Length: 479
Image 1 (cartoon, rainbow, N blue to C red):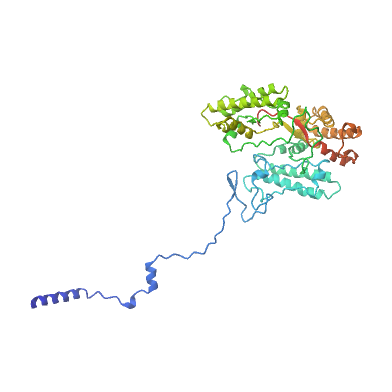
Image 2 (image 1 turned 135 degrees about the vertical axis):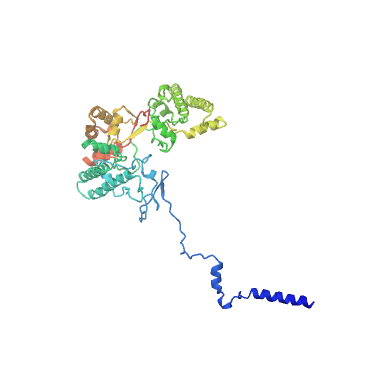
C-alpha cells in the first residue's frame, strides 16, 4: 500500500515538472476592458447624419427625361405651379411648334389688340420649355419673346403700326438666321424670300388678330330653314405620335375617319343633309387591300351610311336617317364580330340599346359639323383665300358677306400667291366704303362702324367679318 502511494506522488511530481515553463498570465499584462471590446466586436465607422428630403425626379417629356439646367431652380411657370408646363399645353398636337408661334403680322386691323394693356402674353424660358431635345421650341419661344419686347416699346410711340411691323420682321429674320445656323430641319417659311416669306409667316399665325376675347357672333339668321345648324367645329384630337396604329396610318396616308357617325336627330339633320356633298366617301380602290381590316370595315360603313342618308334627305326625314344609322351600325358589328381580331368596343354590348348608346357617345362629330370652318375675313390670310378660291360654300347668308366673298374670288384668286394678300386688303377696304355709302335698309350696322373715322372704321368692321362660316370639303388623305 505504501508503495502505491509513493508511485502516485512520484507521478504528480513528474507532471508538475513538465509544465514548469508555462507561466500563468500576469494580471498586469491583461488587456483593459476597452481593448477587449476592440477585439470582441465589429468596428462601425461613424458617418455624418444624412438629411431626409424628397428627391425631385426629372421631368418626363413623351417618356424621355429632360433635366433642369445644373444649379438653376425653375421659376414659377405660366401653368400656375412650380413645375414646368406639360409640353402639350404649349405646343401643337405633335409637339412640332409652339401653339402661338408665329405671332400675327401687325396690321391696321390688329395693332389695337396688340397694344391692349390686358392682353395675355406668354413668356418662354426654362420654366416652361424643356432644356434638351427641343431646341426648335426654344428658338420659337425666343422669337416670340423678342417680338413682345419690341411691341411693348412700339406701343408707346405715335406710329405703332410701322414700328410693330418692323419688330415682327426683324425678330423672324433673326429666328431664320438662327435656324440656318444648325443642321436640323429648318422652319419651312425660312426657306422662302422677301414678300413670300412674310406671307408664309403671316399665314401660319394661329391668332392673327391677337383677339383673346370671346368671339362675337356674326350677323346671320340663326335657324333659317335653308341653313345647316351651325356651331363651333368640334376639335378632333389626333392620335398620339407614339401609337403604332397611327404611325402605320401616316405611313400609308390613310384618311382620318369620322367614325362612328353621330346619331341622327332634329338638331343635326340640317348638317347631315346640307353638308352631305362635302363629306368624303371611300371607294374600294381608295382602301388598303390588306393589313387594315378594322379601318376598311369602318370606311365601308361610312360609305353605306351616306348612301342611306341620301334617301332620307329629300325631305330632311329624321326618323328615316335614324333607322338607316341603326341598320348600318348593326351590319358593321355583324362583320366586326365575325373576325378573330380585336372587336370594336361598342359591338361587344349584349343588347342593341346598349350598342347604339355606345356608338352615340363615341361619335367624333355628333353634330356632323366637321366640314364647317370659321374664317376671319377681317384679316384675310393665304389659307382662308385658298379655301374661298377652292369653292368653299358660304353658310353665312346676310347680304354684305357674300358681296365681299364674291369680290375676293373675282379679283384675287387668279393672281400669283405673293399678290393675293395685298389684293384682299384693297377689296376689303372698297367693300367697307361701298357698304357704308349704301342705304342701310339692306343691313343693320349695330356697331355704328360707318360713323367712325377711317382706321377705327376698319377695326370696327372686324366685328362683322371675324367669324364667317363656310363649308369646306375635307381631304381624303392626311398629309
